[in-house]
Image (cartoon, rainbow, N blue to C red):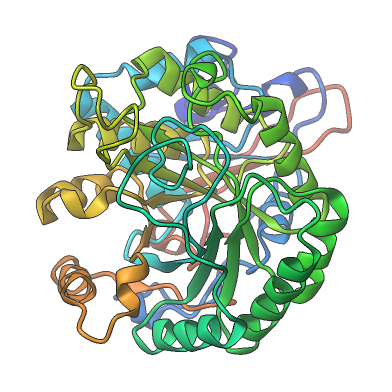
Length: 432
């Protein structure tokens, strides 16, 4: 006889955590038991058990069939068939309920005490020909940013070395370009940068505008771990923000990155004059990609005078509740994705950032200020990590297995197709 929770997992009713596997009803549903041999850890540093490092390997090896997880009355699965209305239903939950559900889902898949630290360095600042209304680096916007030439390879490698010494494990290089296009000499130098940073033992990320399949392949071969290409906002609001690059072009670059075998880093910005429906729309696009992004950066607009959005006094500022609501919804609909606190983070207090971590964020950008000799912002981050009991995620290793999973608190049902009669068993991680 099925337990109440197992019946709920297989229900076709209105549970907003309905699994993708619901389409397999009427076929055989067989299950496998997850078993961990080591004793339950008592602290984060005690557990050496990790998932695979490669994202695609992680999401496939962890899910031999379809996988449904449940804990504390909630169920979750990785699915790409979300309806926009379902995501809106989650997004609009009362804040206390949304935060609790997101924190529960977070603990089903992740060890919340481990947070990735990333460093972002602008290797080519200013002079961009795009017309993004929020960007201080566009030549169309009159801001304090002055165009600079691309940094030399050795300068970037020295910066990466300092970042590693300061504790970062992922190094991201950004260039203010619309696309790499025919920049053959610049691209050659970037490949050298990627190879050099990778050789230091750091994970390497880049954001260089649009990529074609061949450029993506070469970056992968050079050692690039991940590529960032944000969608910024919903498809409907996007034309109000940018006209020089289409939404479809952004999706094409994401496709090229994924097909080259690199991890996709793709998120958006709050504070572009969008409404809540647009925020839901962005999450819907991300959650219905063929494969969820490895990481989703959630940015709060840092308004810069001289940009159209920076000069628009009618646009409301993004507060901590806006950020936490977006992060929590992203955590629920993309449970295996790393959610990154990005631009605007340091404008929030420690308590506000703690709320965002509690909502499911498990990665931060330290920013290029990390690369200065005296860095109060970095020291503040380290103090925050110590205050909250966080440890940084090392480079080139997968995330820690969830403590709740190791302790046997997560019910896991793995579903595979076969016979025509449904067969269901309860499976509890860590228990035979």
